[in-house]
Length: 360
Image 1: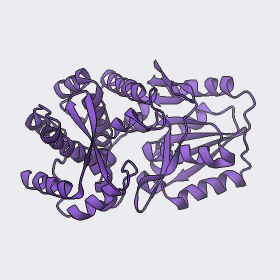
Image 2 (image 1 turned 90 degrees about the vertical axis):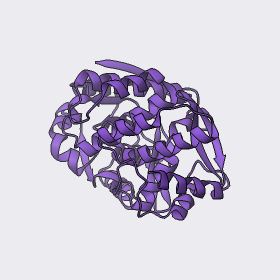
Image 3 (image 1 turned 90 degrees about the horizontal axis):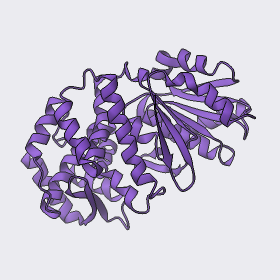
């Protein structure tokens, strides 16, 4: 088991990574919450079917209620959020209760937001079950979606701990592995050239990832995220660099309809676009052809979806929560590991999207 300490202005908490770490969950709760009343597990249909017994066994000594939500981004709606709060109230949860978000990034975002707003905030623990959640489970950004944009309604609310049991990753379908791995690549590109080099040389397929490889890449990704979050918990400065590839990626997700593209697969397109902008606007020297070939080998689409209107994508990007006065800000790279912020006009953005599309 590996333990990483996440340090933010509001809280310091542990991330436990390894096989069977879920077995340590009960002891942690007993120590951290001696006056605990009830536990609410929020999980989704897929994870519940596969692993409900495992987490129930780990929490056998506690008064536990479980609420099952839809899988994926369908969990992050006002309706599902309201249903979770209603369930918590009907089952008499109180301020001494604990929420456990047991699932992928969507469940983590939803469960954390439920915890942040129920009775003005009760504690929660992240138990991620996807590779993608190594990014979303750490750092305290919790949210639900709005039809106008992803993660528009939310809060900064740190968990009490993260228990990352690698056994839960064994059942991941390939598209979910691709979704999560994209965020690991992002961490290397924005902050750790050695990590990017290791990934690009060492990982040639996502069909089977060994436990040592998973443990290394996830731990390093979490450490990179902590480097940003520890300096800027509420994303007023350098934490925004973690959004590399997300400006266009989120626009693709929203415009295509949530669930049509996985988060990471959309972010890959966003990163490719941002890398091309970085070459033109920030002088980045980068072997983009090798990068594209590697991504294709791993099964990623590297083309902008042809059915999506460039004008509508720009409008989505203008509505992005990182935009100021509807001016689009992109995270670009001067070099691998050195991100910058760059403001781009609508006209220039449309032109660059056209060039990017034609260049494919």
